[in-house]
Image (tube, rainbow, N blue to C red; front, side):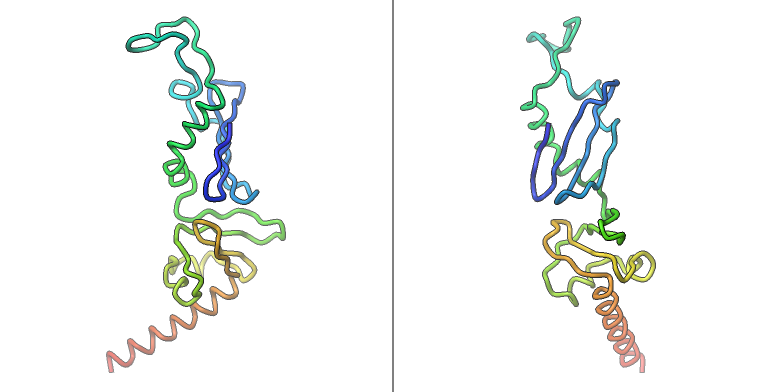
Length: 165
């Protein structure tokens, strides 16, 4: 029960309990996993007959893989936004952290740094961290981000000094 789009893989799975779980990966890295993401009251089962309003069957049938895929496809954007939010940080295989940002990078570091939350850079980012955009297409090191951010801050301070005499 998987759906792939934009490098993300959404996997819904039975937890053998009452709910269904969801795992979200990007390029093989797990970003989110929750065994109780989908309530069985709304997901995972369908009426065995064509009941007019609510299902009146004693037992409902489990969703097929096709029905799960259709669900994940239709709710893809909502699930990504709800569970990944603006910044997702995951451990990386080298012991550093990998940050997924809710921005589209252009490939121009000076421009892209201006798109980042200014509180992230000095407070959350380490030099060896990796930062990528929402789509995972452009990556920068924490070191490169710090340098560009520092240059931008110097330029901003100089402009303020010139404008305020």
